[in-house]
Length: 406
Image 1: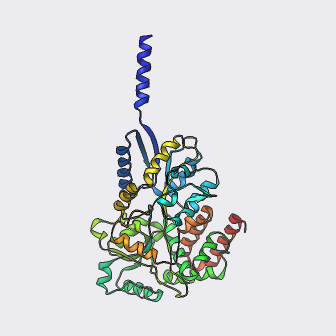
Image 2: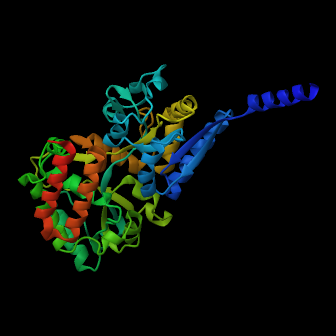
Image 3: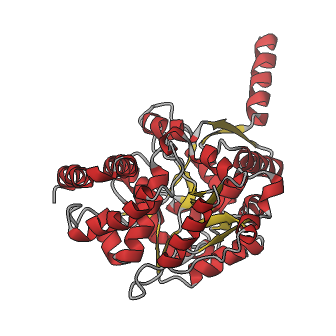
């Protein structure tokens, strides 16, 4: 009996002092964001020693595929990294996500984050996404390369084409891009569409309300085709990931790269201060200046076993302390509105966005996921076989009708 009581007391003691475990599956596989997340987790564990966060990191593209499996699994992780907007709403609509509204019982969502973020983080009136950071897209370039050839950052499409031609004539690939994983081509589609047809048209198109065979959509590819046929894009781009293509820019072998701020995550230290960006050039002065500003953050699977612990962790992630640390580590803009831009580069990005006429997330975050896959395959096919455009748009239109039933 005495032995039994001793064993019972040991078990109770272990249970009393056992840490609450939180399993976090992350796509932050590049060294800089992986390190920043690990340090953020360490901050949380030091502040709240009763918790232990186990981080499982997956390659970005593998993560996108595996997430559907995890969300449907009875052994779902407690927290997952993901994207705001349609990418989140798709899973929320399937009942695969846990509402996060009770994280904000003491303070409202709007007290942490800009009110404009709410529509990208909710579905049917409930919050399902905890935003951590956001960033701008721009045309990145090496300042030293532009200085070497006497180039000024272009403001108009005509000026942009002249810069491309000068770079090409000097043996430099004008535009780096790696389309192995498709989504980089969607950046070009977004910006050309927003500069030619405007934001409302782009919203309706990604919502499935406009046919891909509409002449206004064809016009996007007319402009894009000029860049393709003049050989301004990196050769063999379908064989490169976005990081591999970025190395051409870093080595000075390519002049420009339309990319998000996270390009600095993979830039060598000796290159980072030589990287700058400019706003995607104006095509039609009558059309407003619109930008892509994706929001990254976290979700809790509906089948997670430790939801309360997961919510406690996400409340920490929402705090000024946590968001300021992450923003400073990576040069991002914090989602928490009380955190200032961490450096001059981020301040420039913030000013560009504040001076814009409106923003979207990104093509594959704003449209139906299935449509995004079909669309991005079509964009890359066009960049390789530009004369197939009519057939490509017909295929996209068939997919739009099937997926959106419109």
